[in-house]
Each structure stands twice: as C-alpha cells, then as structure tokens.
Image 1 (cartoon, rainbow, N blue to C red):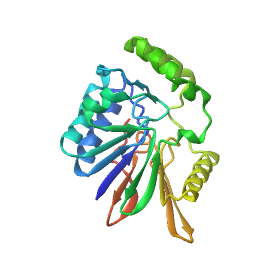
Image 2 (cartoon, helix red, strand yellow):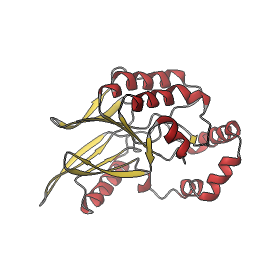
Image 3 (cartoon, rainbow, N blue to C red):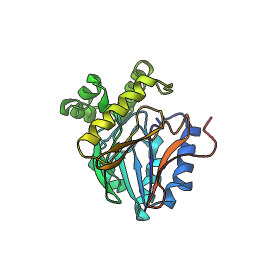
Image 4 (tube, rainbow, N blue to C red):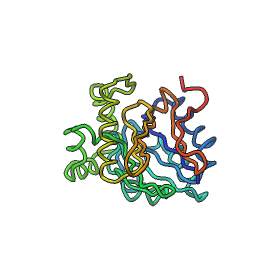
Amino acid sequence: MKIIFFSDTHLTRDNADRKQYVRRFIQDVCETVDTIVILGDLFEFYHGYNGYIYPWFEDIINDLKALTNKGKSVFFLEGNHEYHMGEFFESYTGVKTARNFSINIDGKKTFISHGDEIFRNYLVRWLRSPFMNRLMDYCSPVLLWNLAMFGSLFLSDREKHYNEKVKNRFREFALKKIGEGYDTVILGHSHMADMIEYESDKGKKLYVNTGDFIQYASYLEYTSEAGFVIKYYKKKVE
C-alpha cells in the first residue's frame, strides 16, 4: 500500500507557474501510488456548481479525473477555501469529497482533516450554511470568484510563517482525537510540516501535518514498509 497526502497549494486563476508545479507533482508522484488524499485548500477559492467547472482549473481537475480513471482512489477534504464541492464535482472526477473522514490504514484507525475546525472561524461557518450555499448557487461563477478574490486580499494569509503557539494547538487537537480512539491523526492548514509520536498504554500513536506544499514543498507519504514519512518535492515553485 502506498498513499500520498498533500495540502495548501491555494491555486488561483493567475498563477500559472504554481498550477504547473502542482500538475507536475500529480504526474510525477501521485500517478505512482494507490491512494491520494488532498487535505484541502487546493484552490484559493472553489464553490461547486452543478454542471460547471471553473475554466482556469479545468486542467488540474482533469488531472484528478485521470487518476481515478486509472484506478487510483482520490479523496478531497474541503479546506476553509472550498465550499460545497458537490455531487457534480464527484461524478465528473470520481473523487470522493468530505470535510473529514476516518480510514483504516494497515490496521490503524486514522482521522484525516484539513484542520481548520481547530479554530472557531464564524465567517467560514456562515459561508458553509445552507442559506449561503443557495446564494452562491444563484450567483454568477465569475462574479462569485471576483468577490472571493477581493475578500481574500483582506482575509487570506497565503504565506504563513512559523508559529509555535499554532503548532502546539494542532498537537493538542491531535492528542484529543487520539484520546477518542484514533491511532493516527493527519492534518493540514497550519502550513507547518510536523510529525510527533506519542506513547500510550495501547502502543504508539502518531500526529502528522502535511505542511505547505508550495512554500516548503512538503508532503506526506505512507507505505506499508516504511510507515509515514514527510517528504519534499524537488525544487520549490518560484
């Protein structure tokens, strides 16, 4: 078994170099494994319309579709920049979407999420409400995109820096999930790659954060032979 986990690429309409970098990673690395898990914020903004794909993301979405067509299992966990990916996205790509989920990895009960639920972001909760979902559906995709990009100028910090307090918050959350019975907790969102092993009376438990794929080129690999390993993909995007 071989699984790849990555997150936080924050693709936009205009940054072609960043998008090509992610596409190369999908072709070079993801096509060689059994399962791919995207832990959110692949896009700087995405709302799932029925029957519509943002044309500036069509190529990378078709790359994900190509993975499932080759028999790969692909999971997409919505981050705080993705809203209601929807049935059309799933049916078109074959990618399974969720906010978080549990999976058994070689006998280990594993919790996987983007990780933004650690913080009480009332704006994101409001944007995820059924009312806002319907409102977004009625809004023109281009208009909604432009509104989201305008808002991101004030609300989005795309290049997060090292923060010990934030790192500890994620570790505390992971310990809480381990206390609920999980053997492994995998998160993104902090933009800080992290791996820490905990001893318990039921054996070793593990917390891993995939980090920032764009700024640090970090991602997580799991194999049955080596377990979880944080890796770094070639040269970083400029």
